Amino acid sequence: MTGLRFAERLRDLVPGVEVVLSDIWGVVHNGLVAFPEACEALHNFRAQGGTVILITNAPRPADSVQRQLRKLGVADETYDAIVSSGDLTRHFVADHPGKKMFWLGPERDNSIYRSLDTMLAPLEAADYIVCTGLFDDETESAEDYRGMLLKARERQLTLICANPDIVVERGDRLIYCAGAIAELYRELGGEVIFYGKPHRPIYDRAVELAAARQSHAIELNRVLAIGDSVRTDLTGAHAFGIDCLFLTRGIHSEEFEGIDQLDPASVKELFGRPPKALMRELRW
Image (cartoon, rainbow, N blue to C red; front, side):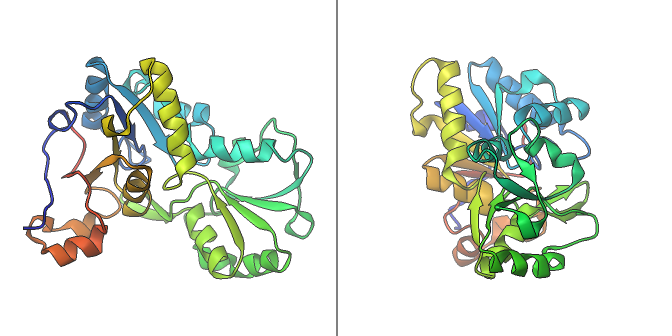
């Protein structure tokens, strides 16, 4: 016996749960299309009086994430609020007015600094780095940035990672994210500040918003996280002290082939500490 619990439906896991903290990419959509059954599951949980806070390592503010969700057909009624690592990164930038920032990321993420009192600068003149991703995540990997990161380390620049994910699904492919660059910078001896899962601030903010909607303090044993990443979703939930429903169809899908037949040692190697339950994809 592996000790793993396999669930067919979200409704079997939520008696006594007031708040769901759900990942977005890999749970609600894959970057190209929404998952209708997942959206229905979250909507039905809300219809029963629950609160759904979407927590995402998207390096963009919540309103930008919402616009993307709408384009993909995810209705506003699916959730109560969004907390993004982009929002938390913007708070850092706002708290350092007038400082020169070297921005590393694709043009689509320019909302990370828009309307804030900051100056963009080349690496040689910057006070710190904000990394929202790779300049071209279709063709590049973190190794393409080793030379740049060595120069940054020489200048002892702090790198603010606006997306701790290493990879994310885009359709049926995996692409590199800001977390891959941040981890390489750490390996090279650079200082990194991470915003987003699995780090605590994003969970604190999500529970704060849920408490406002429920009009009372939220007990952590009444919160369920949902995600598809061991490194961010599962690790973050465990560190924060909440249960996690883990979806196996996401970025780890190949590793979970035949998971129901795994021995305890293999389960420990995959998860460390197992989640509350496993489900292939979210459904009510």
